[in-house]
Image 1: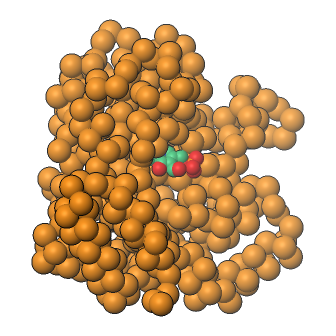
Image 2: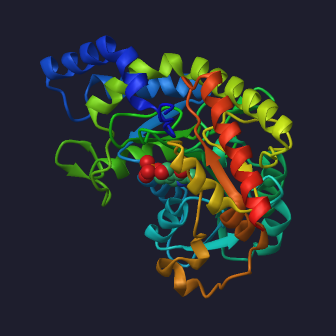
Length: 373
Ligand SMILES: Cc1ncc(COP(=O)(O)O)c(C=O)c1O
């Protein structure tokens, strides 16, 4: 029996980095600066430089980063924030937690926020648009920024799946007024626990986020706003500093793996989900579009191959968002994504032979499904 193929392989990544991770964690233990310690400040400077932005403010998660970026941009009760229906629920939750209303819109052929749908959804109450660079592909930023500029609306990017992706030489997270990143372990840049960051060129916004994440205090026990505890942990920052110098290489490997998948899938007659029009993609996820998705997934699983669905139940059909009053069928492209997309194993260390095997099993399963239809 062939060995299992995981969806992501963090154990392999961490085994290779173990001496550097141990040393970095050891330094934090020796300094004992666990809360907003030296590594947080260093990582913030390094990640800001990596993105090509002036400021990075570490946060406790991607959700908290997005919520704080929106709050600092002035989003609050009574405001509407336009988001894609095809995203992780955290995008909507961050808007809701600001007291604002998420206004869901459908996605385009590459499953990213549809610009025409955004234009149609804008109202006098729209305060911001949150494009999501889903799967590692950059949303259609030029058109969105033009739209937002014309209406005096902020663009806050959800870059939680797109560390290092770039379009026309500009990195994800530097197009809008601010952006949010997640360092959830399985992300292209992941911590060994939760973590996130706000990235921005806007000094006042950066300052407000710094207050929001740390009880509204600039100096200990002097609280100028009602901020909470949403700080990036020093141990996680130390881990992220070990990994950040490898991010570009890891993204290149993901792109190489995607090219391998594409070639193997093409010869098997299986279609990858349509790419972003501009080709920007760091393949946080490698997504294919297929009939009989659930059956194929079961066959992969039976062969020891993990896969994922991003996302099986769209936000507008989640009980948590029943109050939006949106039923099945309102967002056809998002419904198609939920029914037909399948995410295959994707991580920088994935071997060509593993990709080959995934596609062989898929092709066999596809033929079996076709025969039984
Ligand atoms: C698109 C998107 N937005 C937001 C988040 C939230 O990030 P976190 O899990 O770090 O809160 C995630 C990841 O989980 C995500 O994929």
